[in-house]
Structures are given as structure tokens and as C-alpha cells.
Length: 316
Image 1 (tube, rainbow, N blue to C red):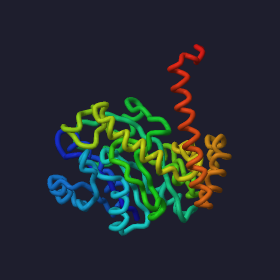
Image 2: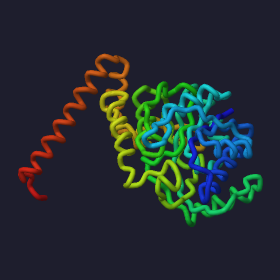
Image 3: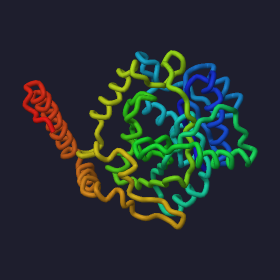
Image 4: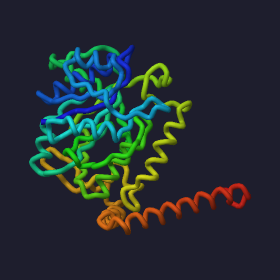
């Protein structure tokens, strides 16, 4: 029914616990699910053998930062997926209550991208998802100890195979790639559905650590990696105006227990979305409009910098 795929950190210390919990939850959430872990370390392959999941090591890396390209993850996973529905997900996120929402979406849409909110929760022990009390206990803790991220923090994408085409060369763990995926759906007319908290996504909290202690964690020291993804995001705009369509607020639909309703939060984006989709259907005009938009924003940044240097901006 579904293929999960994820990059992972090295299975050491706390991340060994968190990632084992996440993988166990995926296998339990959708019985018979295919799970693909993408990383080139032999130690990761050994853990995958132990857990009974697939390991793919032949993926493109940026050797400067020892990080895989997100586009390479999508290409490798889709070429090996045995299912038409895939879930791209962070390697430390527990997933619960997935089956019914996915069935509900499949009955309504042939192609789709499903996203939702995430709850942050501290977890420090190995969890047994074969015990039904585990999921119940997590849901209780979510109410008292968890906190919910905003609409820009998106940790999973459940989508129909091939929906995103060629994904740019974003680096894993440095932001922007999730915003680009949202933009791609919003600008191309792929039904983008916000399921809110219907699918339970628990991000297991952990302290920020240095890159040398655990891979794919971005700190201020690694700001050049964020700069790579910022640049890629700017260069790979899907359609003119697409930069403003990069959070869950841009979703076309909200999922409810009874079905789907137009997303009222996306109303302010209606004109922008219509313009972006119209331009996307005319590739030459779209490229010219993106170039003009980029030049305009570049001019505004330069002018703003000049105003500040000359001290011409009035204080509020």
C-alpha cells in the first residue's frame, strides 16, 4: 500500500533509539509497508538488515558536506518502490493513525500530496509498538507534554509516485526542500491536502548536536549548508510567485472526519496560486516571469541596503 523512504543519521546514542522507534512505528502503522533507508554507511546497512527493512547506499552525495541530495533520495526510492503511494519522512518521526486517512484520500483523489502538523515530544527509551498501550501512552503524553510546530515545519509528505518529477539538489537536513515540495504541488495543481492532526506525527525531541557527532544536523557553524539550500530554492522556483506558496497555508483542501473542505486559510493565496498555475502551463512565459521577479527582488534588496548605508530610512 505505501513505501516509506528516509535518510537517517548514524545509529549511535540517542539517535539509535529514536530512529529505531520511528522505523518500528512505520511498519506498525501500515501493515506490509515497504521501508527504504537511504545512506551509504555500512553500519546503517547492518541496522537495516537487523530491522528487516531495505537499505539503499547508491545515492548521490555532496562530498563537500558529506550529505546526500534530496533529489537523489526521491529518484532512488521511486525506482525501487513497489507501491504507488510513497511517504518521504524524517528518520526520527513516529507515525500513528495513518491507515484510515490514506484510504480516505485515495477514495477522493487519484493524485495527491498529503501533509500535516507535527507534535514535538521528548522520547528517550525504546518503544514497543506491538503493544497497543504504547500508542495510547504517546497520545496521552502529547496532550500534556507535547508542543505543536507551525505550518512551515513539515516532516512528512504522503504522495502518489511521480508527482514531483525531478526534485532539485537540496542537501539533507538544511531546510527549504520541504517548502519547495509544497510549492511544486501548489503551482502545478497537484491536490495538496492538509490533514491537520488526523495523521499523528511525533517528532522525537533531541538536543542540537554538532555535525561531527551526528550527521544531518545543521547548526550555526554549518550555515554554509543552509546557504546551499537557500540558493537552490531561489534558482528552482516552480512558477512566478511560487516563493509565497511554500507552507501548509497553501493547501487546497482540509481533511475532516467527514471528507474534504476547501482550505479557508488558503484564501489569501488564491490569486497568487491561480497566477502561478497559469504561468506554469506556459513554460517560456513562466521562465521569463521568474527571471523578472528575481531581478525585481534583487533590485529591492540592493536599494534597501543602499538606503540603510546612507542613513536615509526613517526610524519608526
